[in-house]
Image (cartoon, rainbow, N blue to C red):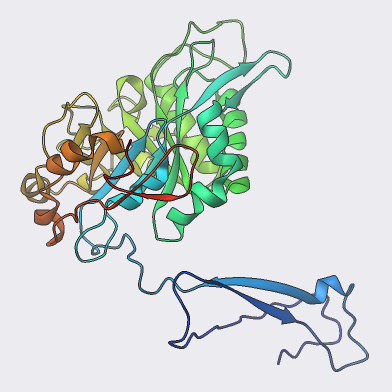
Length: 354
């Protein structure tokens, strides 16, 4: 029972739901809640406002991503592939491998009519966002963070060539997307920009400072979300570690390195190795080598990264990741399921590949 003062216009209460052992893991249960009042001084706005339904699914036996407070974490980009394939990567102890999944990538482009930079979503990204309850939220319910990749796209804008006002405008739009689609943040990649227009007040000459400014403004716009960067070109630099008197650790949460680059060895500003990756692996072309778990532990790296693990390449991908046993004390379980593009159905691996 909730007791409120007669002058109170609204109130909040907490509901605790305890499940017994009769719930079935593959079932979703509907729990109707009705609000009633015992005082003539209290009215409910309308009948609909006094009712709601909670959908409940028992996920207590499903593994999450937590592998220890100090464990090296993992970041994976899915490039045109169904991100539900992250569920294929499970340790034998039941834990999921990938801590962060980044659909790659949405783009920054110029809106000539509105005269501002905007977020452009290709067909792959837009489909995931439109159907995020099927393709993204199931991962979040298991503890995986969804961080949207942001890439330049060949026009006058770019993630490292926005003015202060341009960065503020674009950051606000990113925050709106993260809120609307229940995403956990963004990851900036400084590639494929076109020539900037020096007469455009939303743009500036490409620089490390402009890249840092975008990260800073994005964190200002959504302080509770993740701001990650792909450490390439101007997006992560020792030349720009302070913006408006605020140090880099306050506006960059994760740094993932380019192939062959280990940002965890020499973190910039007040970042530490724990915010940086120590190894990056490309799973299509094969660059980046096999996972080196002991090296990551020895040098205090906080992350490792993988790019584009496709089901047709699982044999090689899982082989290259075999040293997760060193990181987590449990080997990777051989994959048994995979997900086809635009399909939330789990298929049997490898039987259904063809």
